Image (cartoon, rainbow, N blue to C red; front, top):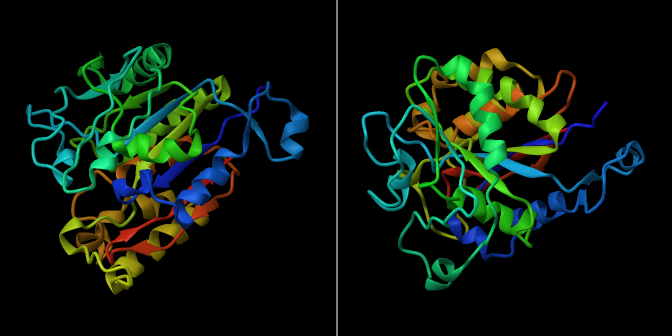
Amino acid sequence: MPVPMPAVFIGHGSPMNTIDDNQFTRAWQRFGGLFANATHSRAMNDLGIYATPKAILCVSAHWAPMTSGTAAMSSSSYLPGAASAPTGATLVQASDNPTMIHDYSGFPPELSRFRYPVAGAPAVALRVADLLRPMCAPAPVARTTTWGVDHGTWSVLAHVFPDANVPVAQLSIDLTRPVAWHIEAGRRLAILRLEGVLVMGSGNIVHNLGAIDWSVDAQAHPAAIRFHDHIVDAIERDDIDAIERWQEHPDAAYAAPTPEHFLPLLYVLGARAKGERAKTITDGYVYSSLSMYSVQFG
């Protein structure tokens, strides 16, 4: 029986993590060190090593197009109207050579000069469309080549796979769907893990740009801590019901005032196999209102 690839949620934080060297980026590098350029075998399991994935499917907070035809909601987090996404209910990026999307402003020019020349994974995009089509009907699952790879994806992969040697497909987030829908989508996509695909969500459990304190020594807001601890405890207990009701938590309005950075976690939890325990990759807070929790399953 094939050994499944991991499913992983990364708290990506600031785009500056692309070029920064810090505790979080070093932990992402260590996660990347779990993958060897070899055919996977059971013996590798004993060493805690995986083969290099055939491809990566990323659900990024920065591709959440609105069905009304507006620009990607999460693009406005950094630059209003930037990197406008194609419209549609559920979209998969299916380009052979995806463009690199810089959907932010106000950061040093070296960040905009950064390049991550990764190939696309159109076959994975087609597989994703087939897997999700029944639960999307009558709305379509549209493949698009006009979207590329956004910073929610490449800022992390620059450390996990710095050689850009693993093809990438992205799946959009339909913000009109209920919470349970996103979890079920993850369950349907779980089979990709048996097909050599690394399933990745990229967002942040706590993400409130309006409350950011850019001070280096900024302390996490109490509401951020309470919400973060509630969600992480539910993940570790595999309490999906508590996570489905995340918006009912009294601190949700502060910790996650918009849903797009929280929702990628749900796809990863859906793709989690029964009995797989959560393995924390990173944890902590930056700028008072961003949590950097990252977790691996498998």
